[in-house]
Image 1 (spheres, rainbow, N blue to C red):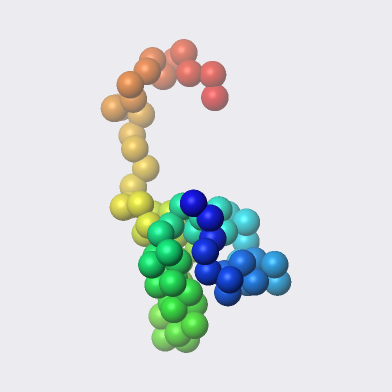
Image 2 (image 1 turned 90 degrees about the vertical axis):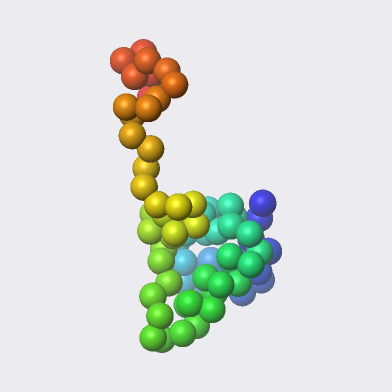
Length: 77
């Protein structure tokens, strides 16, 4: 996906949003991007950014390594 909303692309160019937030917005649907932009425009609302945006878009918590499908001690990263 890509950032489909021109206002979000412009905000990124003006450095009003950071690269991490922009990266997460590329994974959001067009409707999610518009919803996020509406939050930004409303002074009474909080528009999550960065990691908080990722959590909001994709359902919350990180996945525990306890459920990894590979041997953790052999993982190179």
